[in-house]
Image (cartoon, rainbow, N blue to C red; front, side, top):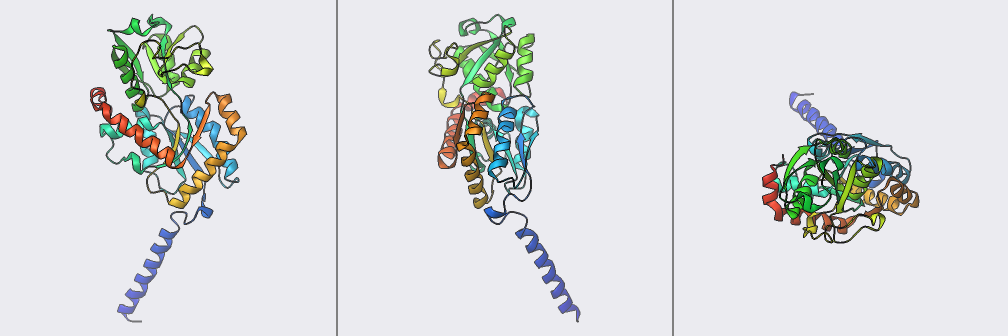
Length: 328
């Protein structure tokens, strides 16, 4: 064999190997997915709402995948949820690594320009698990009982991720108080700090808020739900509207959504949506979510994407608030 033909043969073999590796790098069809365990990233510490919802849902994803793979819940806290989010964004887009996020968090990061590699509309949005209004909780030690008590004062709020911090700032503007934020990696540490008097208040979805209030009776006060009406499950808590607050509801509210990085193959994304629609129709999952305290509101496809797009658009109207917060 001459050198020329030898080089040609070696080059051909190398090309074949590379092409083979590329072909098998990602599932070629939905039938081949999943080919390994699925990692579900929770970008906050254990015990908070993200963690509870993820762990309530993971077994039912496994169930409706036909036991073809395990779903491993992985807590990656830090930087207000950004560390876990970055891990998901940079993961291989093969449908095996996803995260549970609140689209407001991602919207704030995108509008603020903190992560240049992020494009909210290119993420692989898979399925919404719930949709919940926020609830403002104050510590009994703070001495505050109504929004009027807080007006014109500097209030120490918990900063729990960019989306929560942003929404809290919007509510603080509506109240007429000056927010001073202290960062915490989750609802649990924020509630402890509020009870101890290290901060005055925190605001997360009403389910997580009320779970902390009920678990620590007499130490935390639910001031109001950031919505136009009371919530049927907690009728004792007033709405912000009935207390005279004119809040921008288009940027308020909270949802846990399963999302993957950009460029997940279309067939794998459809397989994810089919699996999640089965989960959403599973009455055992519905009961489990209700038992965990998170009334389910499953959604996939174009309606989900439209909602995420609307959140991004509404968030963009508050660039001044985001800039003032200096979220990074």
